[in-house]
Length: 202
Image (cartoon, rainbow, N blue to C red):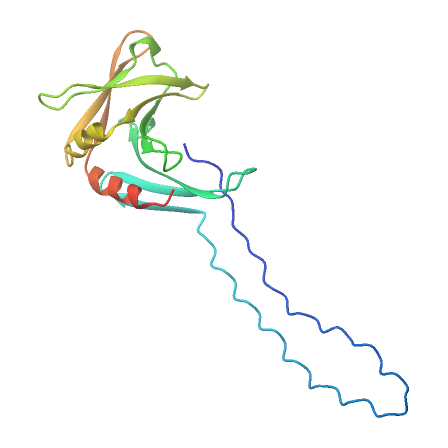
C-alpha cells in the first residue's frame, strides 16, 4: 500500500544584489553624496525538512507513514497505515495485514496479502468473536508474488475489531489444493494504533 518516497527539498533565498546607478551628469555641480551602502539582506532560515518515513509500535502493530510526492495536479501528501507481519515456525513471512486509506475522504480498508497458492473463489474470513459474524474479505488482485484480499471497514466493523483489543484472532482460507489454512492475528495494541493512525493528517 505504501507509495514511493520523495525527499522534500527547499532552496535558500539568496541576498539581493545591489544594481549600480547611472553616472552623474557633468554639469559642473557636485554630485550628491552617495547614500551609505545598504546592509545585506538577511538569509531566510531553511524550512525544516519533513521526514521521509516514520514508524511507531503499539503492541503487535506498527503505524508507518511515508511522504507521497506531488504528481501532476495532485499535491504532496502523507500516506499512513497500521500493519502486522505474520511468520511461520521457520520465521519466514507468510502474510502481511494492513489497515489504511489513500485519502481522508476515502474509507478505511483492511488488506491481507498471502502467497499465490491461495484459492480465490472461497475468499477469506476473519473468524468471528463469540456470538459474532465472520468478517469476509474478497480477493482484490494477484501478482507473481502474492494475492491481496480486502474489506471496507465501516464504523460498525471498526468497533468490532477494537472490541477485540488484547485478544487473538485468525484469518481462515483455502489453498489451491483445498487444504484449510489459518493465519493468526494479534489485536494487542490495535486500539492505540488505530487512534494514532486517525490522528495522522493523510
